[in-house]
Length: 296
Length: 234
Ligand SMILES: Nc1ncnc2c1ncn2[C@@H]1O[C@H](COP(=O)(O)OP(=O)(O)OP(=O)(O)O)[C@@H](O)[C@H]1O
Ligand SMILES: [Mg+2]
Image (spheres, chains in turn red, green):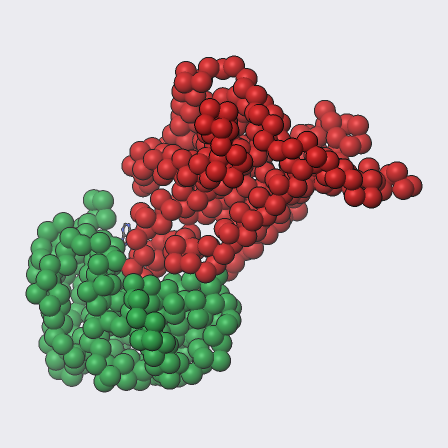
């Protein structure tokens, strides 16, 4: 019995670590969707770029974790803004399918452009953290897991604060809710959309570095599967809803960990998607989705 | 104060405003009446910069208005209460008022204006932490007006404030419009409820399918045969 409980807690720790990375990526998906109603399929690839930036910072520049993380976030933010300005902004009034196809194009561009630049070869992340393992009542916490969880939580807290209390956050909420009404308040919608891409991409960049630390290896196609899963997490929580993306990511991470823990790791993706399907059947707007009716 | 000269606006191929000209002088209440689809909302959206005139001239206090983005229109002192209120339903009453003051930096002035809005609409004060989406239609109208006041406008554009409200509330809203005007804000009021609009306005224009067909003193228009037949039910 004690053994089972210990196993359970161990999987919960693993699930939370992985889930917090999914959550970071899912946040960018959901924020961008909230403001421009676009599924930014290149988002997972921005995460990949973040992973490489972190790798360059740690291996070539010999920086430690925090400066590397910061560097990856800043450059990813700039990349996100550029993608929006160059690829998506000209299509803002075009059909949704045109924007979606463009997003897939940007995704492929980053993946294969990345290959040209850094080759398709798998790179190994250096051991950024000491190999310390904490044993708390039989549950193993790796030093890296703890840093990862703390990093994610801090970033999510910063995001929450930004969105709720700062001017740019208020503009983001206003534009997501009603673009024309926001314009009538004097909000600069273009800058707000840029800021949203910047923040979402910075979080993806951070997730990339954490991903590299967690799995040790990175390659130019590493963004595809986590990107897809983060998308699932965002839809699971209710696309466009920020707390939804956080919870969706954690639920997904925990599910994967428990399914793997039961010895059925080949099934873990299937189970993740099954949950998505079930949630969408029961509550099509996602866990946190509301059907807001407007009063006339 | 506000002058439009031969303004043409299109939605793609649809010619919504076919060369309208009118003006609003400082201190006035001017109303633009007309039936569904006449182009009333289009006129206000164009003044606010949400739509661009294809032809014609728009000035505010002598400065060009036709080619500046919406945020600069707000900064110049024009704010709009849009049709259907368009409050931020996911934000609280207080956050909505803050959004109205988006371009302002004078914290103490903003605070004063919040008090002013609460004086005009005591109901909003009672509900200041309530999420706007849960307000009644009348309260949302009050909030939309309060929010527009928060930018400290010289000119306030109101698009059908009476829409969907009970007669007693309509009367209350129009009393407050008069009060806002008396406190020094010029008003351009768009209405289908011609009776109410003409009763508070100094001057009026009648819009029909994108053209201004009549204009003059509100009292005179209210008495004219044409307007009574078409807009006041005989
Ligand atoms: N987004 C749009 N796309 C195409 N046509 C539009 C659009 N908005 C308005 N129109 C057309 O422009 C004309 C004027 O519309 P507008 O909304 O200004 O009318 P209105 O006078 O405000 O009417 P109402 O009293 O019903 O609000 C109408 O013929 C309408 O069909
Ligand atoms: Mg209208």
